[in-house]
Image (cartoon, rainbow, N blue to C red):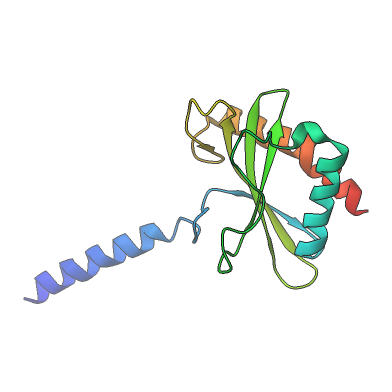
Length: 149
């Protein structure tokens, strides 16, 4: 009986410890960027960015809207349209206190919706993943940070 109990406990520990390698939450593979402003200021900067660069605004015929899904949603979802690549970029922001916000790059979708979302740090090869992150940083993240200065 003690052997069986030991095997069960060891098996349970292996399962628990292996599950600790994944980040908690709905977006465990997201690429996170920490921005030193409140969530409200970051959202405002993103809106200014989209107004100044309307090629990054998602076309009206694509049913993806920025915002929270409901009053319990932790994330403020933001979608960008990369007109050069004809792709939708899914991100979210989430504030942590009054002076720190996480800006997450989550996934990319071709705007024709012929494929599924391709998640960053999961569905791309390493070189493709690096390219996706670099494009996001150069085209969106850096310009948004400049607006915040």
